[in-house]
Length: 141
Image (tube, rainbow, N blue to C red; front, side, top):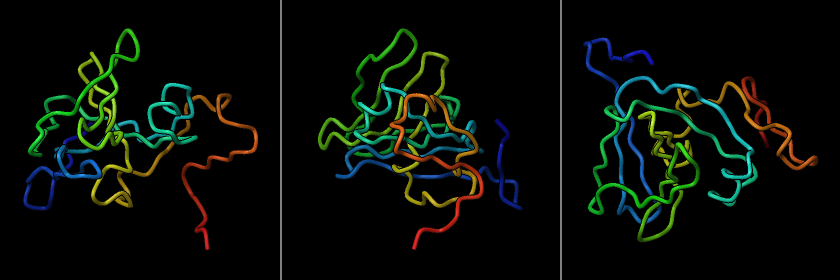
């Protein structure tokens, strides 16, 4: 992941958090691997048919809300799902890599072009009637 900076050379910081505000985060630098996913883990974790994700090195993410870091549930051999212990909002996945994958919907400014998905994972797992388009997405009126 590139170190994304402002013209003054300061690392760009993106912020976000849960529905109730108890768990907040700041993510420093450029997000990596912007993608959507329709795997069974993501669908059940979020309740959505598809989830949009970006990844950061663990050291680039700070948990800044009053609750501190999110609650975790071990979902696979290499990852734990992260959620707010108060309101239950999906926040992401804390991988053993160490990578923090954050759901794009939890960012304060989700329409940031750096968060736009470039690919889709587990296409075969999405319902046949559900369509996912990454890249040039036409506006929905």
